[in-house]
Length: 212
Image (cartoon, rainbow, N blue to C red; front, side):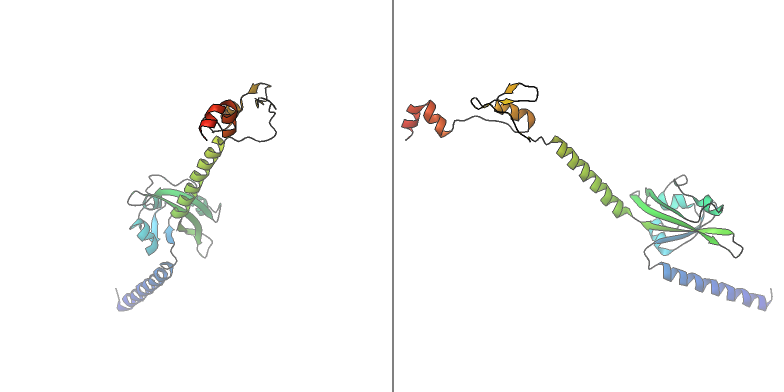
């Protein structure tokens, strides 16, 4: 190989290295994982953010290295992009990190097109949304607990027909119930009995006098 060819190859290699270094410098500050994928889901390149998230992923199938899956992610759509059926895929994927912890990511795929209009590869953006999903799950859990608690709360409302003499209450079936029985069946209240001073004076005047 002549020195001219060697020098040309050296210049090309240096240009590629500089371009790659610039790409790494730019993409490492955005906090988002980036990868370039081939048609068979092989990761051709990944930025430092993604490597920090999923380890050394280049040369391996994306669905395994990113999410520890053994099959293509639901809604992947990679082939649809290569077949020009769509120019954007936006999905949320649940998976596991290298330590086995549950993680969620928003995955956005867009085509990389050459000068002839051919899709040569796919750019995949992986945005971590684990904290957001955990917050959503916690909110849903709290809502369910609140709904359950509200369903167990019993309340009384409206006008209650009550006897002016014995104070029994008439229910919606026409039966008359003692007031404590009526309330106990419709609320969580429980009754304990005692005697107020006025009734004590009326029913047991001798005890009332002794208590003075």
